[in-house]
Every structure is written in C-alpha cells, then in structure tokens.
Amino acid sequence: MKKQRQRGGQQKRRATAAMAGTIPVANGATVDAVQPTGADAAGRSGQSAAGARFHAGIQTRGFKLALALFLAGVLPVALALSIPHDFAFFELGFLFTLSIYDLVLAMLGLSVVVGMAERGREIGWIAGTFLGVLLPMLLLFDTIFPIILQSPLGDELFLIAPVAVLLAGVALWLPQRFRVVGAALAAAVVALSLSLFIGLDDFGIGIKEFAFTAVLGALWILLSPGLLLRPFRGAWLIIPARIIGSWLVVIAIIVTVSLYVPLTPEPQMPLGDPSAPDVMMPGIGSLDSPSLAPLDPAIEEGLEDAPGGDGSDLFLPREEDPAP
Image 1 (tube, helix red, strand yellow):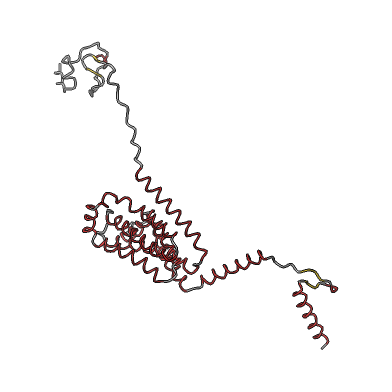
Image 2 (cartoon, rainbow, N blue to C red; image 1 turned 90 degrees about the horizontal axis):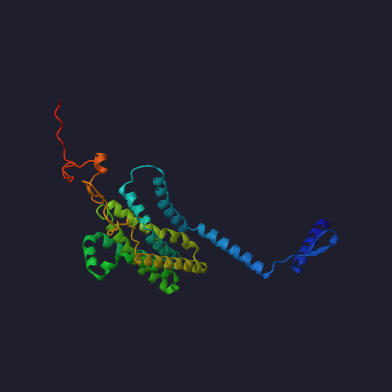
C-alpha cells in the first residue's frame, strides 16, 4: 500500500511539474521544460498535416486505380523500347502521340486541371469535349479536311498547336468557377490539332490500329497524371498550377514566333567574276567551258595542234591504226 501511494504521489508531482513547465530530476531538483515557439509548433503541425494527407491519399481507392492506369501506359512502352523488334501499328500509334511534344505539354497542363477538379462531373466535361471533337474529325477526316482547307483557317493550320498550348496555360490561371470551361475549350483545340496530326500522317486514319492507339495514348496523357494528383488536391495546388500555366504560355509564344521567323538561306558557292578575261587554250577554247582536258599534254601546252584545229573531233573515237 505504501509503495502504491508513493507511486501515485510521484505521478501527481510529475503531472503538476509538466503543467508548470518544469521537469523533475534526481534529488528533487527541477529544470525548466523547453516548449516550442509558435512558429515551430505551426511548422510541425503543418508537416504532420501534410504527411497525414499524403498517407491518407495513398490509401484511397481512387489513387490505387489511378496508379494502375498510369503503370498500364508506362510499363508496356518501356518493355517495348527495351526489346529490339518490329513495331506493330498499335505500338506506333501510341508512340506517335507521345512524339508530338507541344500537344503533350498542353495535355499535361489540362491534366493538372483534372487533378484540381472538385467533382468528377467536371472531369467528364473535359474528357467529353476532347473526344467529342477528336472522334468526328477522325471518322470524317476525308470530308472535313477539304472544307477546312477552303476556309480562312486553311492558311493558318500551323498555328493550331501553339494556340492549344496557350489556351491550356491560360486555363490554369483562371479562377475555379471558370477553370473547367477554359480547360474544355483548350481540350477542343488540342483535339482538333491532334486530329490533323493523325489524319495527315503517313499511316493516318487508313490503319485503324494506328489511329485507335493514338487516341488512346492522348486520353491516357490527359487523364492519368491528373487522377494521380486528385487525392491530394487542395489550396496548395494553386501556385504550382499557375507556374505550369506560365511556362505553357511562354512556350506557346516562343513556338509561334519561331514559325514566323524566316529561315536563313543556305550559303551558295561564289560565282566566277564575269569581267575576268577567259584563259584560252590553243585548240581547246576557254577553260571555263565545260569541256574535258585533252589527253595529250603537248596539246595543252600548245606544242602541237589539236586534231581538226578547233577541237571538234578531239574526243571522237579514232580508228585503230592498221597493223604493219
């Protein structure tokens, strides 16, 4: 009983000392407890909140499905590139979309908007607008493309891809209530540009496997990164999204300016001076004329006359001398 009372008294004294900001040590002495300041406490609480949000996001079912979708696009491509083989048309279609760098950047920007979307319905609007423009363009490309060429847009087709990148960057700067509308508009322009790239390619829409996997690759780029980001969405995404949007706007401006800058003409070989006198050779004429050099050095030095006097039969085949 005495021991229990002593332990209970020690626990009460420690609790009182902790509330008073002191820590008991041996021989009954106490020292002041080090308490974190307001900034340190806020930093630690922020780190713990971010860590808790990260761990909670990883454990969600949406993140696991998004990770599976992401790996489904990365692993087959990595495996195909690591094994030497003849690529099939469905592989070429997927890689073709990845090779259009400016449109890939635009779709990644739109994927950030997908990650910031508050409701799944907003993601459906972006993806639906993208497919709603892309699929009819591919299915009716032979009919629609001549109409586009005859329109005022026909002379400015090279500007569609930079405009798509520009709109994707601007969409990341818009407020939340206008962001999805801007992203849907950018997705429509991206889809129009991608349909032109696919339709005008050598394989184009004639081979269904190529066109199908090209569209599938574009949809994967548009949705996969954003779905990975979606479980961690919050106010912290606003500043990084605007930084990415600024990069896209700058890239679009640089690409547009480069399209209008004329290419430097290739240097040409200097021509001869027409005022310089021609060097005449006896029986040959001017050295500038496209005639072959004589076979006999004596003719070139003027010691002998060329056959015929004017060099007309210099290169005519001669009859062999009769045998003695």
